Image (cartoon, rainbow, N blue to C red; front, side, top):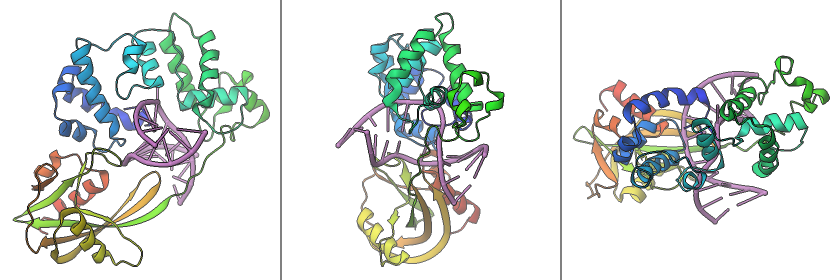
Length: 316
DNA sequence: AAGCCGGGGGG
DNA sequence: CCCCCAGGCTT
């Protein structure tokens, strides 16, 4: 859960997750849909699928235990260099250094290494930390450096005056702590999308997204991006035609929902409508759901906002 | 090495 | 409003 996600965001998910899946076996046994539903809103949904698969592998091949072995851990889906070393050092007391974004930033500043943060320096950092990590408490050592980065040697506004290692820090001496590592800025595209709440007998149609790519395996209302020169209602008709293979009628505007991803900002324009002629849809990827039953399906956060709107509105 | 993958909090 | 976050996988 903590992969590329802040501790604060993880904590409530971690608590309810352990209540829902108290051990590896219960997680391995759970349907993927329930697993994704428990992950709903946390993002990077491939992590949930990996954890589900890893639980299955550990249940089958490691007697339901988390292996105390680097090679075995590294084979599990979602276990890269960081997570493997984290389990070994934090859970099993192995003297392996941990290198995450915090540790990279702390070391880059301590050593005054210019440039952007990147894993290319991890080998050098691992050698360095390997020489000083104490065998008596490697987990404490690793967490102390990460915590220093999270609370004091922060990405923005580092608290150098409070820093316990300030006297060793070359960036603090040079006053370059704000530009190490070099900030990277990225383009945020603006996207408009039309979303179809297709109604039939008090139920709504949802479809399952593909197992790979953005929001993999989550469910959502049909719809998609507006193309140049297209009106939103034209987008709506085209997307429903492409995804469901049917025409719609009775189109009415419902609401607009904004949602920010890392690389783009989406405005969802939501319409209600109905099919001209109801098409036959494979139940594997399409479901007619009530406002109550839709809550059991894993949805992207934008779709959750639409469901909340529908629930508050009562009649569509 | 670089791009993709979400969402929310904090400056 | 912009940045980043207890990374991993794919190309």
